[in-house]
Length: 70
Image (tube, rainbow, N blue to C red; front, side, top):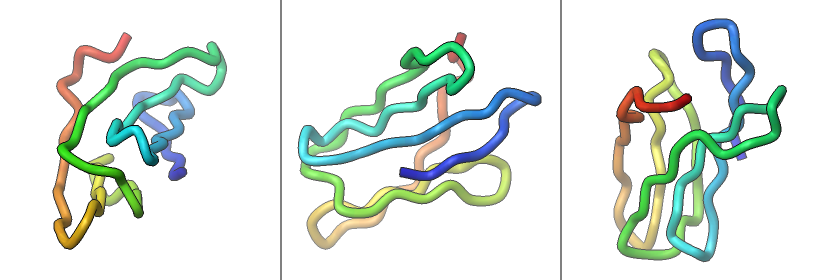
């Protein structure tokens, strides 16, 4: 899990064995966005500009939310 703030809103980013990276609105307690990857995610972090970095298998991907979070 990794946490950040987007437009003043606290957000958590989670990932795991189901191969999905999810963004959560912490105040509302609801899922905002889901990004499916081709394999189990072993690592997750949020970088500068709220870019999500995820590792699965021997791959590392950089993801940008679609902005449709809502």
